[in-house]
Amino acid sequence: MDLFEIIPANLFSILNSKNKDVYVNSLFLLRKVFKQNLIIDKNVLVKELATVLAKELLKMDIEDEQATSGVKINKNATSLAHFVIRKLTETGWIELEYGLDTSFKEHFALPPYSVKLINVLHSIVKDDEAGYNSYMYSIYSNLIQADSERKDFRYAALLNAYNKTSDLETELKTLYHNIRRRFNKLSLMTSVNEVLEDHFDEYQRKVIKQVYLPLKTKDSLNRFKGSIVRILQSWMRNTESLEGIQKQALAFHNFKDVDEANQDILEKIYFIVDKLNELEDTIEKIDAKNNDYVSATTEKMHFLLTNDSSVKAKLSRLLDKFSTDPDLAEDLHEHIYFERQGYINEDSLFIRSYSREIFDNIPMEIDFSEASQYVDDVADSILNDKSASFSHQNVLAYVETKMINQNKISSDALDIKDDYELILAIHSLMKGFDKKVFYKIELGEGSYKNNNYSIPKMDYVRRRKLKDVD
Image (cartoon, rainbow, N blue to C red; front, side):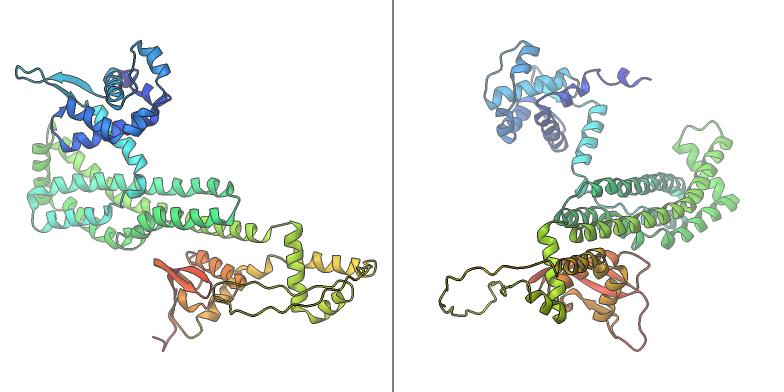
């Protein structure tokens, strides 16, 4: 059967109109009313729309709507709510029916396709609120219970395991494509704040904590796979068990005979076992893709932090170099006069300023002819080596220094003294999710005030514990 033999041809027209936001929110409100009431009264629906969506309704662009419908629409919430309901009825999202009594009260019914489509749209919008379904535990718990206690429900448990395995495959493929999609998003980011916000607020919360972390810990494939395969193989090899499942299948479905039921059972068992083996490879690919994304995020951070080619950035790097080399600083003072600069914040002590006499001197002429080539050479060497400070080895050395003789430290123990150490801490956090480094990151809730910097609550944990250390 063709799709448009089931749904109206103009069903999706409301999603392509100027007022699509109002229509979508009306569908979501309709979903809420549908969940709360068995019978949807027209007056109740109008009142809900006029009350909850009053501001949105009054902002509707009704000129095109009036021209199309040929009906004059009054600019008030109740009239607009009636119009929205007529539009949903005309396009087939809802159907009008009358009560069976003599009152002829108007009610609305939702066709099955409408319920499914509204739920799909709602799930897309509320994707960040959806939790991870414990697929492996659900499969295991149903099978173990049917195997030991409720033998009359073995076919139902097998059917559940089949469906959950298929759902898990879809979840893993969605996760893989979601990570791939974020590479494109990362390439469009132009600031450090964008990268940090996307990595911690979006990727860590919606991907790592919500899907990836449960899949690697409490609902691990390797944790339950062995028991699941063992139960299914025992059913398949035991003639008495297989015959019992065949009888349940015949009662559950309209199979022609025992052979067809037996074929269905074996196909489902083979599917589950084979798919669990395949999903191990899928998870390995997801691990690799996640590591690639974390590395790409780190590189993007490094690029944005160090690739500032403005005059201000070059001067800043030059001055930083001169401040650590007394000989260079002495040579510089012979040609350029600098005054010391500083800053104050809420933690600074008050120092009384003293007035000084200002002399009206003639500015000294500066000859750059002798030092010009020398300064250019120093600047080039600094700019060419700008990535060394935050290299992979330096980041690991930084963490190793902080974790000397310790298996675990908290981020409040980092004692971040300046911006340089802050950037090292950011790099160390991102690298902590890479299995190739010697430590891992365990994220907590909230943040610490570390000197003048606010950093997330987290623990650095060695992957290989040191002996004789708690």
